[in-house]
Image (cartoon, rainbow, N blue to C red; front, side, top):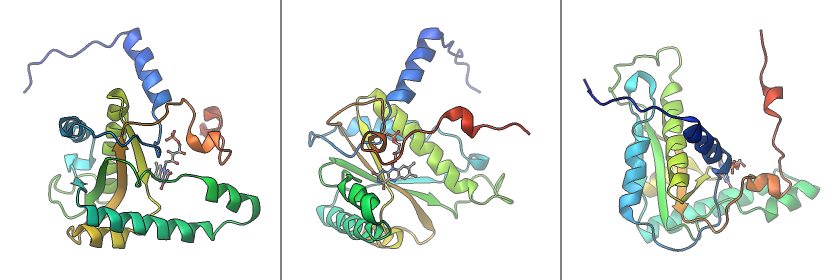
Length: 215
Ligand SMILES: Cc1cc2nc3c(=O)[nH]c(=O)nc-3n(C[C@H](O)[C@H](O)[C@H](O)COP(=O)(O)O)c2cc1C
């Protein structure tokens, strides 16, 4: 049992947290500047403190450093993005084609995040009726990493426009792992309190009150 004293968060801490949430962004435009590997390990250590079903900790992080593997992932994105464009027509297609939907070209750090659905950790607690909670747990870890990165002045971009089977093959990971996210990390070119997709007219923010109901 830990004997550490629990921290007391004051109003100033809450105000800073509100700013952190408001200024976290999905980043696709990165400076090429290298990131201290110790910072990345700090982020990963924090991410691993996230909640997980049964405390299964099913997150697995793959630091993608090989230029060949990076090239394969970039080609995977380019092909997947071209296919996705086919789903849109007219003005939407024009808008889509103008969006920058990954930072794979410049981001100095790339981390693929997987869920190990076969881990025995957690002894199945909580996932009998909802096995997908294993994947939700990994998303929770990514959110921790995303916020912590912002505190360190780093940006994170989540790339999902990718063929997951091809990405798994590119990284030679166990069959039982499923891809949750491919993350680009680095110093952002710009900062904003508005999502890029809002600024470029793709999708406005919904009013939060309209997303809540009472039964
Ligand atoms: C599950 C998930 C997948 C995403 N995939 C992509 C992606 O492939 N490309 C991209 O540009 N942004 C991607 N995003 C980022 C969203 O576009 C972004 O979170 C959203 O527009 C809101 O912007 P914000 O994160 O800056 O608040 C993804 C986000 C999530 C949560």
